[in-house]
Length: 207
Image 1 (spheres, rainbow, N blue to C red):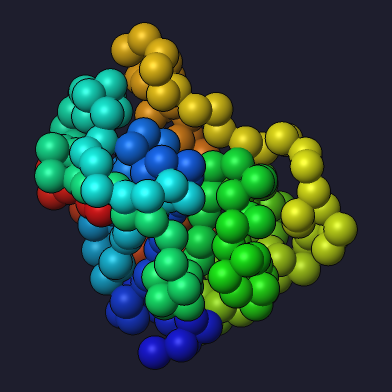
Image 2 (spheres, rainbow, N blue to C red; image 1 turned 135 degrees about the vertical axis):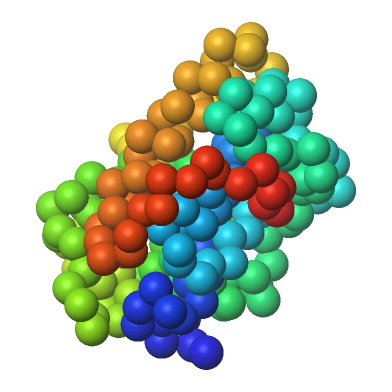
């Protein structure tokens, strides 16, 4: 299936979340997104990665922050961004605008479906929910069309999610809450017809 073929909650939606080390922000965002998608009954594959070399676990602060939400990062091992992962994703969400440069270095065409989380959350509310029968890729294309091409790879930090690495527990908790606050409008817009079961989010780790 190509990155633009997901047409409904019945097709597998491939979400990639990216940060710097893949130890804090992106694994927290991935496990939160996976839980919300599961609650909506969406067939989804959520992955996370970073710019740096992989092979290390999530930070204790990140694990504790999501544990408060009933989620588990105990088995997370960081992964480095690669071309195969980028090409497989329907949507790529990064934590900082500078991370888009790393995506562009691997695949320029992937930039059309790559956004900072802050930017995507705002644009999702402007574009509105995906209508029934509209492919996910078409909705993402509408969101991309709202951006000015010169701003995509700019040096702006607007819309970035701050890195809690090395900070106190409250910094991780604040970041986890911010990630959830920004992710929910995105998932609501992409899957507006997916019924919320009201079940407790799963505690399955997301890589």
